[in-house]
Image 1 (cartoon, one colour):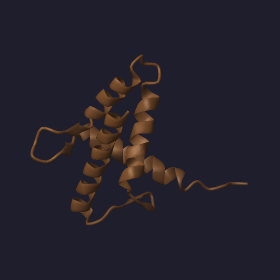
Image 2 (cartoon, rainbow, N blue to C red):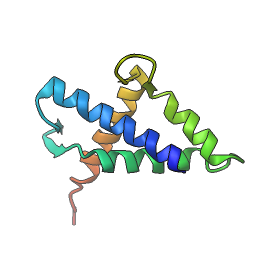
Image 3 (cartoon, rainbow, N blue to C red):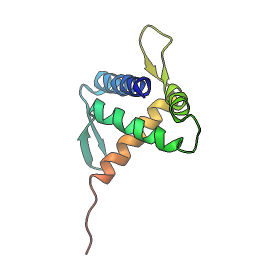
Image 4 (cartoon, rainbow, N blue to C red):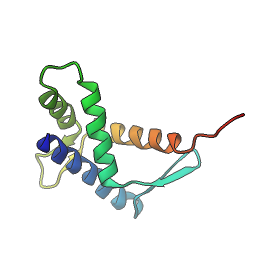
Length: 106
């Protein structure tokens, strides 16, 4: 589980680093809702999501690790997210922003 957590941390830190380079900060906005991208929360969400995705697999940790590996390219001088990785991160962040802005309708 430690390797899985370290990989998720690396992915989250890489996404946050790239976001700061692009926008100058770690604030994102979607449909008028904004929030801060916090690497340890993003990492925790990644781990939760991949574990949930492989819950029926015999070797959950290995299967989850393989899923996470598809999100990052570790071959260059500097780690980069794959296209799929960027899409997954953006989707997680959008879902997080929208779920934090639920309105109660009576």
